[in-house]
Image (cartoon, rainbow, N blue to C red; front, side):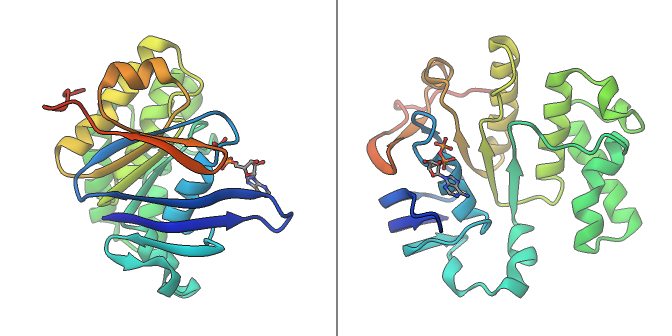
Length: 229
Ligand code: ADP
């Protein structure tokens, strides 16, 4: 599902964020990407979503070599990938419904299908009753759940999350991780970057550790994997 083969990423300023990264995540698998700030976690996720391109090496997502995806085809490719950000990037002048609907509208879904998908996604994150609310009236944890609903509304095969609990207290962090884990249980391939080792360890899943652009360890989930939902 996701396959990195000897991937390097050097930014135009000369900074090498990834140096020879290889790993694979099978369809329906979940893993945490850990490592200190600056290790290259965000960069690795950006290569999956085609926000950045590798300098060298290959990145396969959904069995497609991302190097062969032209700029024109990126929007279609991204529809299969849900992205959750730390600061959830909600639009504060739009309702909860409009925030979750926006990517679907851009993708060209009709009004009825958009409405169906938005309500299904909000239901999955427990916010069905809040469709018409403004994001500012929601708690931080609820706002992050709206961000998750937006990421899954297009029913992606892959969800990547970049420090999704960065601003949340431990209890809410666990709740958000459990919520993400539930999507994995229904078959979504899930990769979550987090520097919160305590939280990640408690969840008992596969951990890929990145330090200075290189994978320094890759520990499988305990057998049988702990269910986090
Ligand atoms: P992490 O998510 O683990 O904190 P990042 O992928 O954000 O790590 O960053 C890895 C390295 O790449 C850091 O040294 C960072 O300064 C650098 N970097 C990230 N994005 C850019 C960019 N757009 N241009 C130049 N350097 C960058």
